[in-house]
Amino acid sequence: MLNGHKLPILATVPRSGTWFIRYSVSYLCHLDRGGRVEDRATGRIFGEPKGFPFDYSRFKGGPLFRVRGTLPTEHLFIGHATCPGFHETAAFDGRAETDFHVRGYDYFHDGWDYGYTPVDLADYINTSVDVRAMERSAAKGRGAPVALVYRNPLEQASSYFRYCQEHKDPAFSLFQGRPLIGMDFSDYLFAAALPSYAKQFVSFQAMAKKYPHQVKLVAYEGLMANPVETLGELLDHLGGAPRERPFLADAVWLARRDHMKEVERGLGRSLDGTRTGLGSHMRSRQSDTPLDGKTVREAIALLRSLDIDTGLFEWPVADKAASAA
Image 1 (cartoon, rainbow, N blue to C red):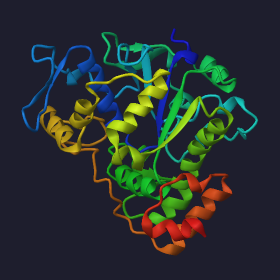
Image 2 (image 1 turned 30 degrees about the vertical axis):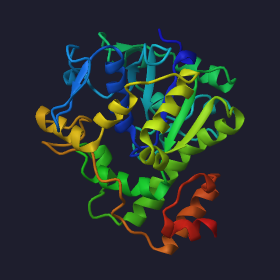
Image 3 (image 1 turned 60 degrees about the horizontal axis):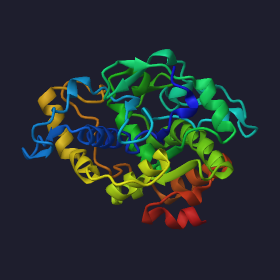
Image 4 (image 1 turned 180 degrees about the vertical axis):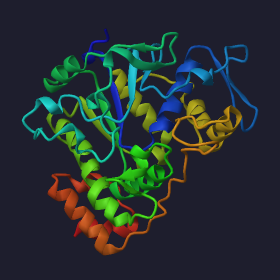
């Protein structure tokens, strides 16, 4: 069994770079192990020319990734989760775990069989995780390092709204029995997106204040602006010390959108398994749901009422005045 206190957590808010990080880390680990990767968009070979190729048939998206050699630990979690230890603290108000508007925000409390947690980049399919040990250790500040990549809540909500509308699973494409297609975005924003965002984010906000050296918060916007530097800092935090990463820039380049869409086209499927046919889960980073000033102000007020420090977010220029109000 994998002791929970030895599992570093790289958590993300949905639609905040999760798959970009998974691709980047997977390519980095593969290159670090002497493998090679062909750029499907350009034909260029990265890594050892005679090394073993990247096996996309075994890439399932984790949520655990075997990272030995790239990090000092055996596994790294990359996915959606609340902050370990928060459920063991007085700050946790005991709300039901089903408060999220859709399953998937909190992997380690979603009721999966954690004795068989899927692993990528390994010659075995799964391993077990002691979630209770992870929670207890983290609550005392003795757990493995934790990081959260989070996005501006309004941009995140807009992106996730579009993503869920096109999801093949009705658990995502419906909200309270209503199809998201045709639903007013403002209804989704206030009834579903913002409360779920706050429930996840506040756990990291609280634990980062309690254990600032243990829990690191990183803005998605910063990751997208400086992906090599920011991902390197995240890996240094999760690994416990800085180190040279000669293949990191190559790994980040391979994780770019046009290359991954070529990979999906060659495989004939969406890599994240949520799209029908050849549809891709990768979309433009820009929001396509414009918001008026009144909606922005009401959204910020709601977040503040849920104990969220809205000063931690990188707001779009049009929203800065409202966020400061």
